[in-house]
Length: 373
Image (cartoon, rainbow, N blue to C red):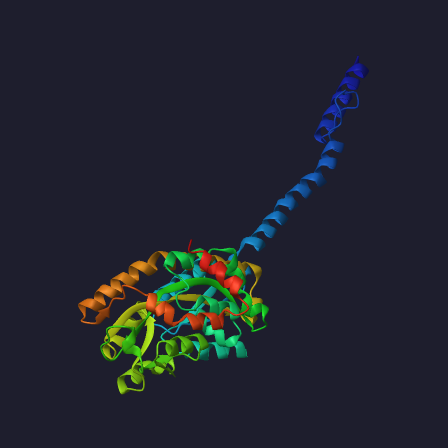
């Protein structure tokens, strides 16, 4: 009896000992969990590492700080309150927004960096002191911009709608990239316009015939020289920064500008007569040096293009209204505004200029004209 009791006690003690070790008694039919625990441990460890790697990769890709900070100097010959100045501000603000503040457009307005030709000389000469600029389409004429010259020919665009039909066409990019493809070292980003350009004079005039013999300021551009000569006037090259004093001192008798620029640069003070002949639409484009463009990441290049589209559209929406407001202000201020009910005599006078400057590009020029239909 004592032996039997001792056997029972020893058996129970063995069972308790095995359970305390986390193991099952050999006679238990359930599977031993130990191997399962050993096998699952490495898998759990691997799964814990993978999300950490993914999170790190996503953080590295999406973080704005990954893009290098950059500042691009932007030259503008007119004040910031002009149509083109407002376009520059909208462009700069949009670039800052899209880049999260890592890209800055440093606008140097009111011609502090020189005239359009001065700016172009600096940009094409390299050195990186000016990265971007807003220029008139005709400014590229003297730098091999044969296609851009077509945009500045007199009476090419019959309306703003005509110009924007071109600016949104397949031809637009071809014109913008012309200087880059010619090896000039700059490329166009987007288009805008600053309204039709008109002549203004120191003395009162009543019509086209009154311009005969006058010294009219021009930039050093063959199209504008030809236009002024065809009207019987004398083209006189004067830097834009010196134009106010040239009008004041009699170096020139008049000049031509879009309405908004005429007022913003205080030209009515010294030349209070404007004749609304609308000889050309102030087609403009924003350009960037190839050196600056190539220094940007693809993401930064895309930001410039997107901001350019935004600024261009804003310019399109605001230009007409802004010009109308300025024109009413000029009339209220006593400026003599001469209407031109029929531009046919003006068009006839400049036919030779158009023929001379479209040779070899007649078909391309006709495509632009056809966009008015």
